[in-house]
Image (cartoon, rainbow, N blue to C red; front, side, top):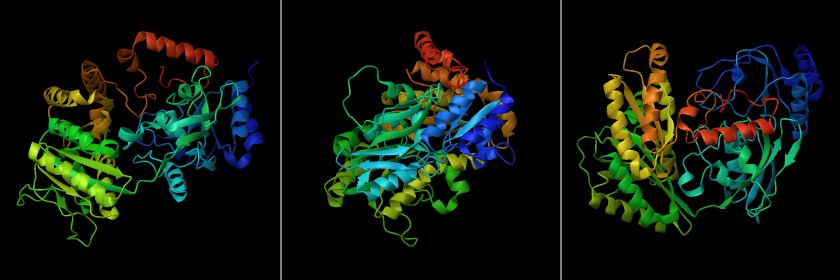
Length: 500
C-alpha cells in the first residue's frame, strides 16, 4: 500500500534531520537548472550525509510513491537534475557527501563520495603526488557523482578517456533502497555483467551513485600549452595528426575554437586578450615563445588576424620541460611548413598556460553574456568533422538568415559544441521559441548523416529525450527500456529523463 505523499516530508526529517529537509524559502539553487532554461518545484529538497541516509530516503520515497531527482552540483546542461513543475518530486542533493574516503598510492586509486567537488578531488590527488585527469570548465562546482551520472568528458579525454574510463568501481543505492558496494578498485574483474558501466551515464534513472573509486596517474614532469591559428577546420584535423605523431601519449589536450566564439570572449571579457585576434601588422612566422609585454600575464603573439579557427594544444611530458618544449617546437615547425598552422605561440609559464585555458573555458560564459542560445554537444568521427562543419554551417546560414555559429570543442576526440546564437539584435526568447526545434532537427540530421551522436558528454536529460528515438536504434532503445523496467519497476528514479 502506498503511503500518503503529504506525510513524506516528515518521514524525511526523521531520517536526515529538520535542517536538511527544505520545503520553504528560496530553493532556486536546487530547482532551476544552470542555464536557467527550466525552473521546477520540489515537494522537498533532502540533503543526506551518508550512504545509509540516502538508502533510507529512497526507501521512504518508494513507500510514498514519490519520484526522486538526484542532484550533484547542478551544473548540467541538458536539464536532467532539477524537478519538474508538479511539486510531487523529491530533489535529493548529494552536496553534503563530499569526503575523499581513501587514496591508495600503490593501487593508483582514490575513493570519493558523490558530492565531492571535482576540483577538490584533483587537489587531493595532487597533494599526494598524483594526477586525477578529469578536467572541465565547471570543475570548481560540479561533483564526481554528477560527472559519472553524465559520463562527463572534458579537455583530456584524448589521453585519459571519459569519466567512465577513469572509474574502477561505484557504490550505488538502488531504487529499492538497497546498497551495492562495488568500490573494489580492481582493474580486472571478469565475474559477470559490468554493473558499474550500467550506472555510469544513466543520469540517475537507474539508481544513485553515492561514491566511486577513480584512477590516478603519476604527475607529469612538465606540462606545456600552445595556441595556434589554423586556416581551416581541415587544417586543424591535419595538425591533430601531426601532434599524434610528434607527441604520442604526451598529447593530452587538443581544443578547436572558431573565430566568432573567441570574438565573444574578446567582446565580453576584453581583459583576457585573445591571441592573434588583434595584431594585423605582424606576419606569420616560426613558433613564438612568449615574452610578457603586459607584466608577464600573457604570452606574446604574432600575426594571423582573421584566422577562421584556433587550436589549443597541451603536451604532458614525463621526462623534462626541456624535452617537452623541444617536442612542441618540432611539431609546430613541421605544422608551419605543412601549411596547417599560420602562426603559433607556446606559453612560457604556468600563469600564461592557465590564461590560455581560461580563454577557452570562458567561451560558454561569453556566449551566455551575448544572450540566449541553442547548445549542441555532438560527436562525429574526427575525419568527418570538416565536412560536417562546412555542410551544417551552410545549411543553417541558408535556413536561418543571420544566425551566428559558435563552434568550439574537443576536436581530439571528435566532440564539438556546435552552438547557435540568435541573429544580432534578435529577441533571444522568441528565437528559442520559434527556431529551437527546427534548428535541433537540422543539426541532428546532419550529425546522423555523418555517423555521429547527438550527445557526446552532456547527456540527454529532458531537453533531448523526445529527440533520442529519432537518432537511436529501436533495438537499443528497447533494451534500455527493459533495463529501466527491471531495475526501477516503480519508475521513481529521475522519470522522463533519457527515456521519454
